Amino acid sequence: MQTPNSRRRFLKTTTIYLTAIAAGATLASVSTSAQAAVISQADAGYQNTPKGGLQCKDCYYFNSTDVVCKRGVASPITEHGFCNYFSAKS
Image (cartoon, rainbow, N blue to C red; front, top):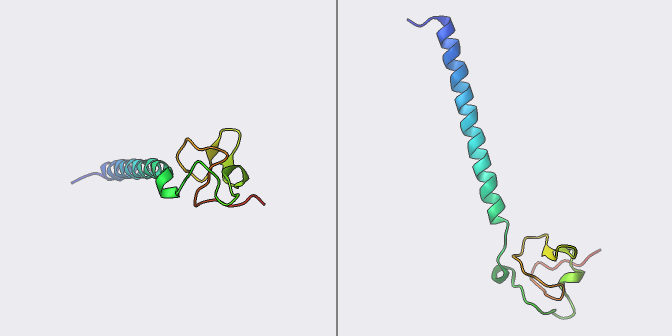
């Protein structure tokens, strides 16, 4: 027969292990979603030229400092490019 102290220790240890497992699963899913955030140029319909006067430099998602797309279209992109995620700056 176990003493109450042993039961408490068992429950405490089990809780610690289950919490660690849950934390590990959460970190793994965050890592996977960060990798999935990059959108290939083909999937975005990216082209290196403007489309009907619309171009990346006029898009809300374009970061001119780093010349990257905040929406997640894979680099390299140009300020004169265009993709299907274009959203005009307000």
